[in-house]
Length: 90
Image (tube, rainbow, N blue to C red; front, side):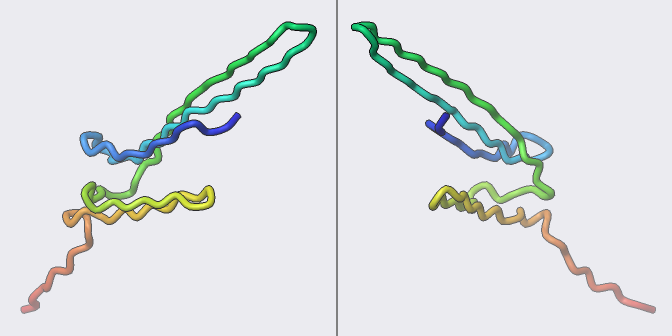
């Protein structure tokens, strides 16, 4: 089977902020024998959720698909970045 379509998205309404991945797979075969044509079609799809450790800036997400490898840049949301707080002693 080969990949006919794939999609990635981040659901900002989900509290876990997961990265969703969906693929649609398909295969078609044809054969002819003694004047009879036989065609077979198989299709399927699946979806998975990859939990993210922090919330993501949805408007700054970058993705690149090259040579069968998907590269994702998912910057943390400002509220989730570590903050340094100065503590005064005394």
